[in-house]
Amino acid sequence: MRIGTLKLSYAADEALFDTRVQWIWLGLLTLALALFPFVAGPYWIYMACLVAINVASATGLNILTGYTGLVSLGQAAFMGVGAYTVAVLETRVGTPFVINLLLAGGLTAAVGVVFGIPSLRVKGLYLAIATIAASMILHFLFAHWELTGGTRGLSMPPANLFGIALDQPQKLYWLIIPVTALMVLGAANLFRTRVGRAFIAIRDRDISAEVLGIPLLQTKLTSFALSSFYAGVAGGMWAYFFRVVTPESFPLINSIFYLAAIIVGGMGTILGGILGATFMTLVPEFLKLVVGWLTPWVPDALSLLAPIRTIVFGALIVGFLIFEPQGLAEIWQRIRRFFHLWPFRT
Image (tube, rainbow, N blue to C red):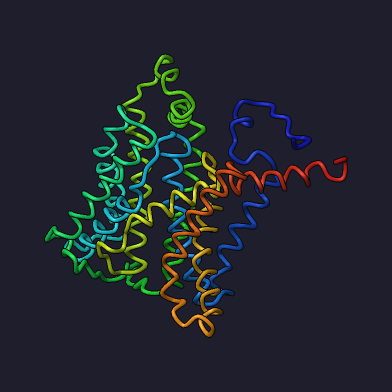
């Protein structure tokens, strides 16, 4: 427990950043993110953008699964809805990218509400199966609907800002990072409101929450809508980043990836979504490095990368559920508590 954080008002007790040290760290992080593209190489800027997209989507899934207790394996498919929305708007309408991202999030939220209706009657494994069914339906539409380009998918022009084409990761960095930061900040503030606390009440005990006057269906659908909105915006940023959207871009394994991210990072914490998405994004890069080292001795090592990646994801999920259910966020909190008490720790 920190020393010297006495709150003198309700507003101070409710503040998201309640100490001067936290504000200093926030300022340093903002400065580091602003300076990063000037000192990092193209590869690391590319990875930073990819991490930010995954953080945005994992944060959305954390709202649904970590805070509301509704398991979903359709996050990648919802990202696909957002990506296709942006691609269609860019190629056929030509609206600004900010409007495209908002419309992508709004349409995906509506789709999420439709597929969230079964959450009133089913939960746990059965809800996960229902979201898998939703994922299969959406993938069928992606592959067979003329508007989405069928199996060929859609190619789209780059985002445009004041006549500047954001066609490189170095330029897209200034779009993706601020949008993700706003989404994470919004999620952190959400759980200081009545709606966010209703999510947590449903997660802890839905029957008791209903007795206390929380409307279950409305609140669960709101959680689905918010989670899907995050997925839609993340999918829209993904579309601008890669500029080619196909049905194969959002397979079921990607939904497992995001579920693994919040489990490894820590469900029910904003920091958990950030740490988990970052860690899980870097794991495949580490596996590529290991496979590259093994190639001289194992000629077909590259063909083993995809199954090894799936096995590693599964092993990480099981390992963290058994040995550290609260994820990387709890490990970080333990490190912080150690230094808060040092040198008085016995």
